[in-house]
Length: 296
Image (cartoon, helix red, strand yellow):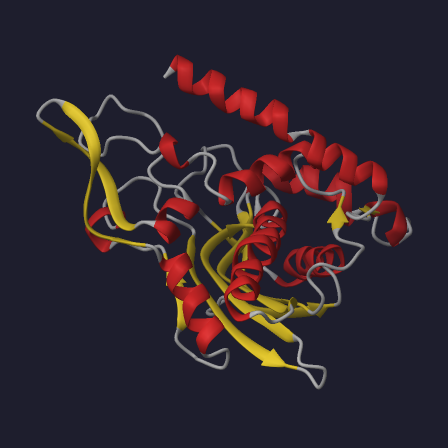
């Protein structure tokens, strides 16, 4: 009888390599589990605690084809992590408001804030309104070796009772300097729950972009140092493939691993045609957000 949830560990040079290794290891060594989101006919999920280390997060091959989305979706998710959809958070005291309960960027840039109904009108209110992003950048620019540069998302007075609390729990940063004086930003990311097939690739890709364009760039601007991305460690307390997704995962990845070359399963993010698709999607995504705003 199974008494323990497996703790699985993988390491690879790039995101695409690490992502595939983690999925394969989960499929081979995970444990079957019920979830609170299952329908009666759904098979059991595959689950484990997972620790993934990506040694060169911004290096190619970066994009794995086996994720439920496209290049434009990666751009949209990255824009979301940069704050493009922070205003989509719902009024927590209005039961008719079906918008999002949070955004990750909102929790990181304005921790403690939520929407409540005041005098019949929706407005921002809260206890803290702490910009953790600015604090982390300032701490690391002044003292790169500090162990105190972290951000959290969990708000107990909201998240212990809401339907869909944040999966991301924390980000922790520390910098190591090489012999040439370059600062290498190392990062630990912890998820309490991470949908390995349905979300984890976009999560990892998005936070690599966030670390490069927001955190590393911010530290470089304040310190005057060259700041590059060092390893990213990705820890998921529950790294799972939902039972309803297992057949698709077998067909699109697991059944192909032994018969198809790895190069057929990846894209290089820095290839010109991928960059054109990625950057060219921004205008369409902003129009999509504008249309959503007008209809809500």
